[in-house]
Amino acid sequence: MIRRPPRSTLFPYTTLFRSKAQIEGSFAPGPVEYNLAAGGVGYSTSGGFIDDIVDEIEVFADQIISGEIVVPTLPEDA
Image: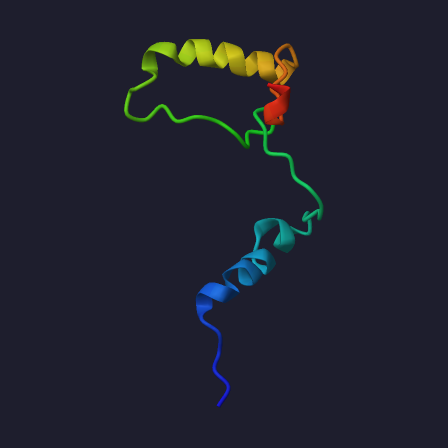
């Protein structure tokens, strides 16, 4: 008897074919850059732990997006 694989192993495949971009025809293969400018990286303000420095963080984020601050991508570049 051949058994069907568990659903958990099928998740990546079914998700890909059901993605909004795939359905709309806007899916573009290749690398995707998740960064501050694209909204792919951020921080959480829940819990109130950083409420007093949010304005400073936003200034730094704007400087990173504009290229004024260059964030190293490799540890040896830091």
